[in-house]
Image 1 (tube, rainbow, N blue to C red):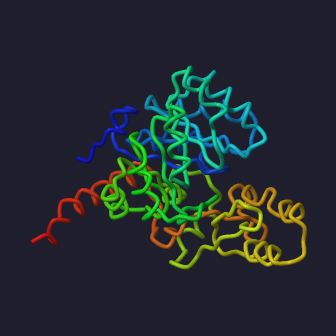
Image 2 (image 1 turned 180 degrees about the horizontal axis):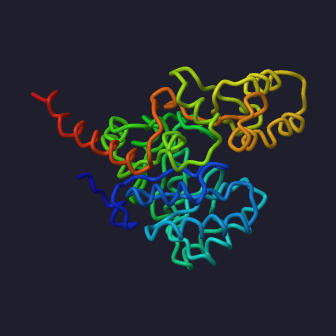
Length: 314
């Protein structure tokens, strides 16, 4: 069985995190992943504190395993939810889309293990100095907000630059990806898109269907002009947004085009006006399964891959 220091650090069976997907990663999905042996997380997204408290408590009613909260630092409610995770004694906080330094002291004093998502070596080193328990090196293959570097090149560079554990994210959906992450020096992985089709995921059925029908070239990146590119499935909305990026439309108007698009996809299943965020691994996912089954299969395959990797060495 694969076990790394991440497991001992957090009290989990498998060194696997579920990504904090806005409008998707709720208390039910978080509990299902944690019950399956990984670390499930609920997303604070752009919602206020009442929503987050409710989801934390839903998760706790469904599992006695550790759970996490993902905080998107670009959210207008970031200050409020940063306070709430401390009040609720959440054991693990992951962060994305920014630098969480302003909250680190309070979180550490509350006994929270802070594990930021990083897209560069510089931010990884800064997070280590600030007291992060680990970092998640996320490559541009992932869904949602993405950086420039790929997982293949970012992960080993981050592993070389810090002494705290590193998890790899982006482009991982099966045991082969997990094995590859370990070969790059990571001690764990984070998966997002793979859990979109977990049985316990409450995303709209249309969203799940689009993931299951995706192929290797099903995603595209938009938003580079605004400084925060996003990877999503190729849809009428994504193509329209990309076209607008290269028009004379103002940045403010472009920003407004994206407001509510993820919710329309995840909650309403709106294929014309919704933004269906997904990583490049969407084309590798072919069936809906319970979260625990996904995790077990991934690590069984990873064990097989790692055990047979030596066949190339003579």
